[in-house]
Amino acid sequence: MTWSQPLLVVSDVPTSSRWYQHVLGAESGHGGHEYEQIVSTDRLLLQLHSRGGDRNHGPLADPTVPVGNGVVVWFEVLDLDAALTRIEDSAVEVDRPVRFNPDADHREIWLRDPDGYRVVLAGERGVHTG
Image 1 (cartoon, helix red, strand yellow):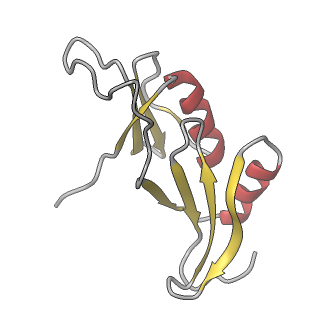
Image 2 (image 1 turned 90 degrees about the vertical axis):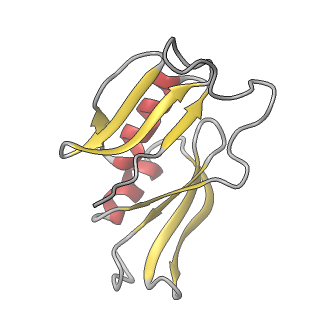
Image 3 (image 1 turned 135 degrees about the vertical axis):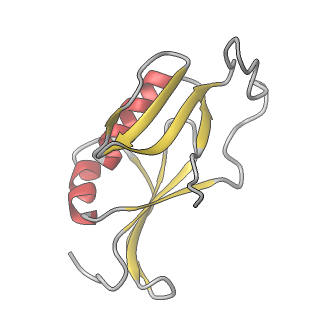
């Protein structure tokens, strides 16, 4: 079996970590200024790494080039309404408000994280209202 372990290169790991923990209702699985793991119920959801890299990897992104163009990080959440409440109660940038996507048969909301990556939270298939 294979699982994805997406890693985003970010400008400020602790800031991005707090953002993803808040939006996803998740927690820190590692912590640090160079690297972080965002986890939920002991499952890795996302890795965050500083642009400058570390002693094992070296630089991971050119700091003069904007990150995120063409990247959409998609999460299915079991309780989209709880996520929407967390988002409404904060300064999270909403890129596209919550709506029903008939092609995917779910509700979804599109956000922008602190680095400008598009992040989509999608509810369960077949659940059209909260």
